Length: 205
Image 1 (cartoon, helix red, strand yellow):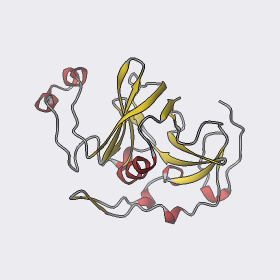
Image 2 (cartoon, rainbow, N blue to C red; image 1 turned 180 degrees about the vertical axis):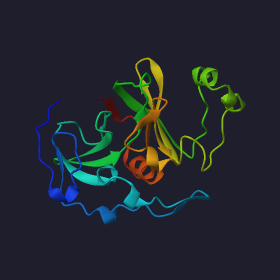
Image 3 (cartoon, rainbow, N blue to C red; image 1 turned 90 degrees about the vertical axis):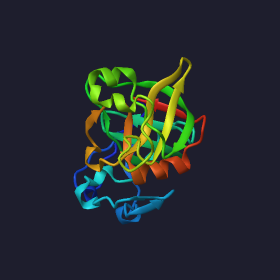
Image 4 (cartoon, helix red, strand yellow; image 1 turned 180 degrees about the horizontal axis):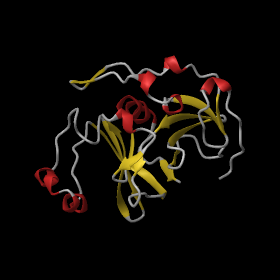
């Protein structure tokens, strides 16, 4: 990685970040995690005091050299960066795949969907036969595993099967417990969705 280590301020309560990034005076209270009414659904508020502060949405310094609009996913630190340019990025806490379900590489956002339908892949249904009832898709809603938004990742081979998506399970952020996709808190995926463009490059490390 083309990063340099920067020591975070004590105000981050000891939180760690990807080398090359630091907060730039971001006020955590400005990132809203209150209840949201969206497309007829009411997302519950997230108890932000129960979320480790490093995983709350925040603007950070970033000198990776990527083009603005690029998305960087660091599976080790559990951070996703949306490159803003000018030495800055918006950083989000994420949940990643469990051991054996990790994926890394480069892709692009081919599709964006609000309140998407979730269709479990056949491999998942084999592992969890109880999901067979959703083989034709689970409709959108507060319990849908893709949450309020989904960004679909494709590469030269087509659909990777991986998504950047929301989740109602805010407590899973910062952990490795999904089936391979990258999850964000619903309020955060709504924010990322508003910034990310179809065709944007996504790098998963």
